[in-house]
Image (cartoon, rainbow, N blue to C red; front, top):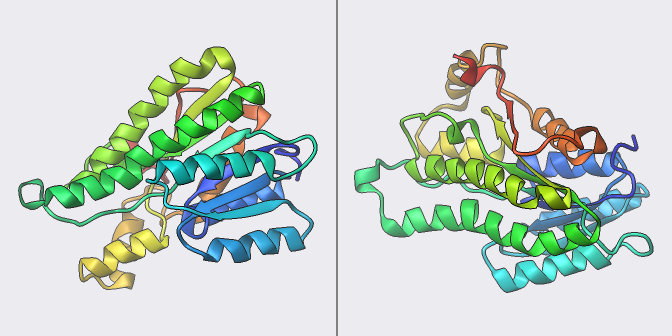
Length: 259
């Protein structure tokens, strides 16, 4: 229950899906958590954590807006009182799936939209968190990529490109910041029925049960994952248990990429 005691964690896209599970598990392990999201439901989650005796802050922010991101990181670093005044953990989780349109028919505006949220926002959040991580004497940046950052699926081209970029960005930043004890790793989830996957299923005219049965069969351990499967991986990478882990790809996919 205290694996993250005394740490300040910032989670983007923390109002729903994987981000919400990460917020809850990190708060449960003793972290003070700042939820950054456009979705105002994050405020209710922050209130719930505070009601249980935890420390939580919600900042409504567009992760592609550099000025707002800078202000949000400052708020997270200074919000939690004596002994904090820093950031120890950044989870770059916010992301969108984009249109399922072949490369030759994809509009540039749609490509740019997906890249802005899934790649540029990772750059911006890391850029503005690093000074606070440095002030803390080190820390952990956790970038949520995807199995689609490792293998192709024959669909959603900008999402694949974006998640591949996040994978390599993580390795490069791991090398850049290792001398300062700032660890940077990526997590690569398999299919988890978050709101993002639900939208993907609906937008492609698939029946939920049929889509789930199809996706279940693609994972050798059987079934799709749960948000908590990913959240516990993030807790590990945020904790001192992973003090010697950087530049790594934590694949949590039920065996999907083992083929």
